[in-house]
Image (cartoon, rainbow, N blue to C red; front, top):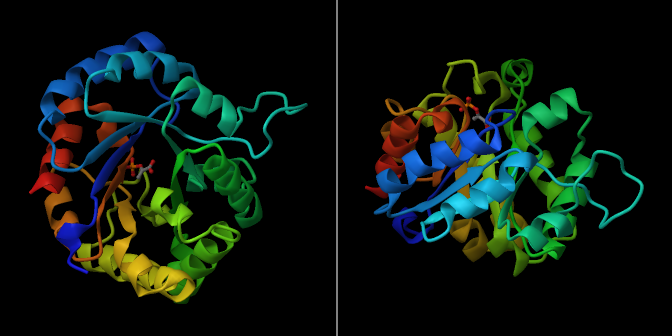
Length: 255
Ligand code: PEP
């Protein structure tokens, strides 16, 4: 399928940054800069900023996402937030399996799968993160590893539900480090993921799924990365906190 027929998605991942008041300010700066975007624009924000972000994005083309969710609907899980709670607020997207959750908070492929299932059941669209550590790349197991992460995360997900899955290929060594994968490296792994989806769900599903690259994408390198045939957008950390930089990436994806 021609890449132009797939939906490009540029999503910001604010991580643990911004108070609700600061969130409103940043969205007010971003909104006019991205209003003519020819791609989907999403900001994923800390839980405490969701209400402010939902209000600030009303009447704009910016979708709002959370950065994680729990797999149970409710119960004795102190400090957790369920997918149903997010959906009830009007949140549309949720990042699941970010490498920072996997590295610092004990997230595993199995818990990623549970969270994906819960998010889909709640009606959310999932931004599913997969990616290798530098040691794994050096061992030559990137393709196998990313394929395995993808397969486990999507266990029990139907072909119809795939319409609400975006996959973000994020090499861990490139996140927040300023070391971007080359456009060819990014494209190669995005293509591997596309083949995994085609193998699981059929060629049309592989061709239709949106696969983002994430890892130090910025205003300068976005165009080259986004130009690649299997890279359909970006998950943006640091650069999503600066309105002009984020807008420049959205602009690059809109070309
Ligand atoms: C991320 O948090 O998903 C990310 C890609 O971060 P950064 O753009 O800062 O590398």
